[in-house]
Image 1: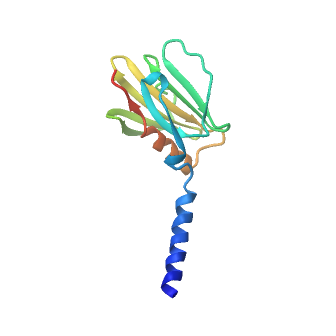
Image 2 (image 1 turned 135 degrees about the horizontal axis):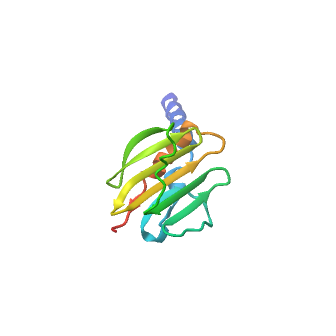
Image 3 (image 1 turned 90 degrees about the horizontal axis):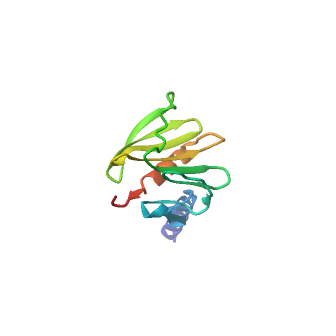
Length: 148
């Protein structure tokens, strides 16, 4: 009986541990702006209207955090953030970089095809915590570009 009790406690521990990770991929949905690229994100991020002239742009928000993306010849590469930290990353076979400031995490891919560029950024008005940093990178890694 003692072994059953230990197994039960261990099972409950694993169950609690598994449920505490915020936004498991099962609670996410897929967005495919104009079928040019797709990415997954937490379902509570809702699209807000944006005006676009020469690119595919969008904005999603959960009421606190904003996610913005831009795909086109003039997509922001966040070069004005000279004090930001930078990390290299490969997304769907494309070389990119992650740029971080105390209130922003951005992914930039300087070339998708020809002059087409891509950027996606999370804006955190209350600052960034390690959980948010992990979630942003998790979302970045779901990006898949369709053949252009």
